Image (cartoon, rainbow, N blue to C red; front, side):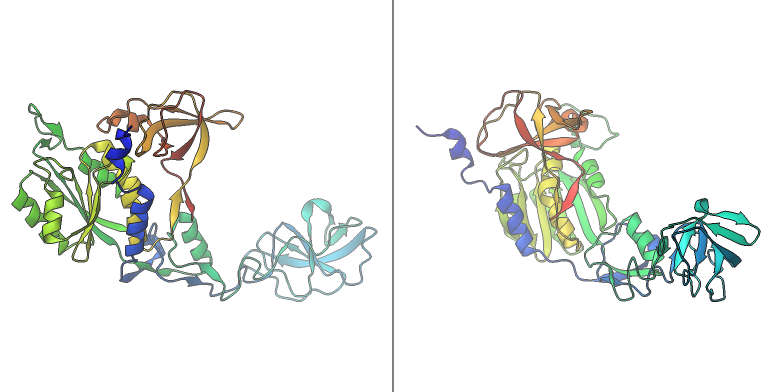
Length: 416
């Protein structure tokens, strides 16, 4: 007996192979620019950053207390030393400590020459300049040694690192004020379809509002990208052909939505075969089967489906990893977890399914997930309510409630 599900999907490219095909073709874009730390947030390092100094620069105190020279001291009984000055943060004590001497020292202040220990202020008693220390104090403690964090010449941040707010603080602490980053990836996108109406215009019979460009505008909101919304276009072969040709001369990446299927008005594949090259078309993914990837000269092309949920899912699973690689970023993958699914899930074998779900964690730390609603590729309400994908492998059938499933939170990545 013929398995109709398999016969319909046997020529579809598995999503893993699609990503591998793209990854094997791409290299980081050429070109870089130097930016100050104030403008570098979210950009990708094009050169590694090395330390110019030891950090801490000097041996400094980690606590408020008293720095002392322990030479000649018998610490098994209380002892007294004479306080001969103070070391402040930013204003070091200028002399060398002799035996039987100590100084008042504050957190971050430089340890003076001759001092080898710091006793915290709560453990001592003070009588004018005479400081009494307890028996058996912890010696050689409460010091941050020069180069303890990193030394001159050490690697601070590697090439391909996306700069976070913490990274900028780290670099500033090392005296770095300027970094070399990859230039921005120039990306253009537009929607196709006679049925589309611009948001804000009256909606006629048989029309839908163009939501896909708003989705892409948000999904592409990244300092590594310089994006242009080219608008919406009717299903007109020559118009779409000219638009793609003109855009390919200006941008690194083109992304379209709609027109990538097999209908009489779906022209994208035919146009690409005429002016460029299709590397693959149709993937074994739900939602999102009619996805095209190719080139127009050196410009990358992604032809996404027209249904809005399919646009979002294919962007996240196919386009986003490619754009990150192009932007020079180190490879990452989305975090996947196991959770108990509390709702029954419908599934037909054949394509890898990315169902939309709501992931929760109870007070015991256990993860549970439920379906966020109807799973049609046109239903945005369920993906708006969701915070994760419930990933069902291609061969999987429908599942009853209570099964453990793989979930992929929308916003969590880990290093590969």
